[in-house]
Image (cartoon, rainbow, N blue to C red; front, side, top):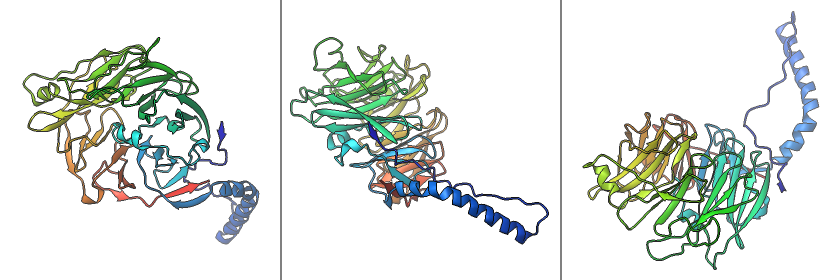
Amino acid sequence: MNARSDLVPCSGRRPPRAAGTVSGRSGAGRRACCLLALAAALTLLLPAVLPQAAAAGTSSPLPALLGTHMVNGNVGWAVTHTQLLRTANGGRVWYDLTPAGTSGAPIEDEATTDYASTGGRPANLAVVGSAAAWLVVPATSGLTVYASTDAGAHWSGAALALDTGGNEPGILGVHFVDSHHGWLAVTLGGGAAGSMDEELYASTDGGATWHLASGSLTTGPGAGHIPLGGIKTGFGFAGTRHGWLTGASHALGVWLYASGNAGRTWHAARLSAPSGTALARMLHAYPTTLPPTFIGARKGFLPVFGSTGTSLLTDFFVTVNGGTTWRPTAAIVTRSTWPLVWGWPDTRHGFESDGRKLDTTANGGHTWRVMALPKKIRPIRQIDFGTRSIGWAIVYGKLWKTRNGGHAWTKLTASLVSP
């Protein structure tokens, strides 16, 4: 275990000031008494405060960000090329909490970036609540999964050996549904044109150990249940048992597979839309499914993107029964060849952008409102809303923030505290 006890995430709040109340005294007397009380308090506090201030490290401008995962309006994580950062005050101050075992090596490589079909969030980072996080980084003979349950103060690392055959593994995603149950999907790019291998690993002890749940090219017990055909985009789980693999195929129709036994076996799942609609034409062509987002174990949204022949559509299929059934919402017309970024901070409020405009919904996708994006925040690499009003955007590595649901954006002057 790599101890980082010298890094204590700070909320950014001022410590409470010492107060003194003396009845029957004049204003000057009360002020003098307060000053004496404050001096006495500081005398007691300084020996404890100074070592913590020294341990906080040095402050510098925030480096270029590749992606964020905001938990709420204050707490969130961010990934740079070599660092894992955390904020507890809405993005004004970030702390470098990179696991010591990475030794400055890249933690998000080109292979990871290529397969990050997660709405812009880092594919190699999973977060549960405000304190638990998992980071997957390349290693000499596979991958290392770092886990923390105390907001990055301490990390433990688990090695995952892979038979790469000399290829660099691509991280399709890492996802935990609670502090114990998680999955990690990787690809080595194997297979013929129009196909792609995928291996899904599972953990039931918070990432301390991993086992192969299923794979495309592997053999043996519990393996070989993921189709080789299709270009994979990722996966998602609604609970400890029910999951979905997403992707696209050169064959007509939707590429979507479901599991009811924690990822050990998979079967084709269906999506449908009213016949004769533009969405039905898109589903019968060559659509791409993208990893679902679940808010709780029953309500979730599954992005599906494709062409009708005359336009490009994105639709967030919704489930209210943990994925047993999916129904379409209102389709969004996009001008991009790929839906760049999206997010759902709760079951009613969603955001999607093709880089030129911001589509928002306040009723679970039944209707969408279109807002033009100001030129200063184009092109957006990611939008990440911690609440229905407070959100962040990454533009050329810089962090922007909105406090009113995307109507106005301000560039943050953020700082980084390093050990």
